[in-house]
Length: 247
Image (tube, rainbow, N blue to C red; front, side, top):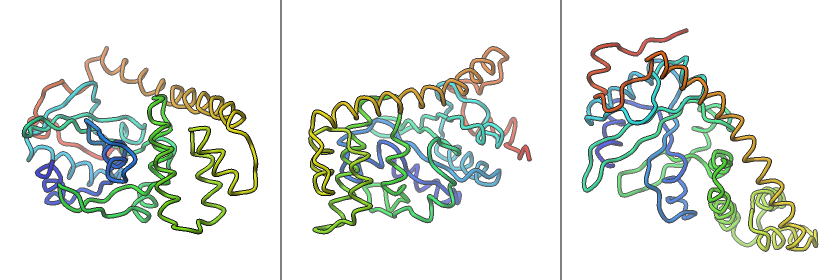
């Protein structure tokens, strides 16, 4: 992965590390197979991204639409596989991820963390929590861990606003009850468990609704032959049809 991020640096790509690898760096998860990044949604930055991917001999992976501003602004994901040792790197890219604000605001809050692949820009914990509110049940354990990390960073006296935020984003009943007790709310773990089950159901349904529209669009693009061909070299795509602004 070091060569991938060095390639992004040489190409001048504006990005933030998000999702699984970001959770691992914060100590809230133990493993993640893929690399997920959030890129600045501009035509120039998308060209730089493709240039960086081409330099790494990346290929298109899965159902990937053309990486245009229109598709980026529509919230689509773009998927690539980069040769690596001992295993290839699977890279998922978004320019308009759900449940968060602008890239510029997220970048202003981001941290630069030292990793085995260099010092990387990583999305802040609060933004990461919003991104992880998906249909996947396992993500809610990770969110709870992230909330615990954020409280621990505040040392002995976390502000009440932070405790309230952490309680809302703790999806294990005993941990939520303990946080609420610090705020003077003596709600039982059983009551918290009922609330958590209901809240997770709402968040999962919201994520399903969000992705349904994008999946429907992908199906139309596939039927019309307008997806990028799986396995195609990014360098060949750039040569055949450069990315242009649709604005």
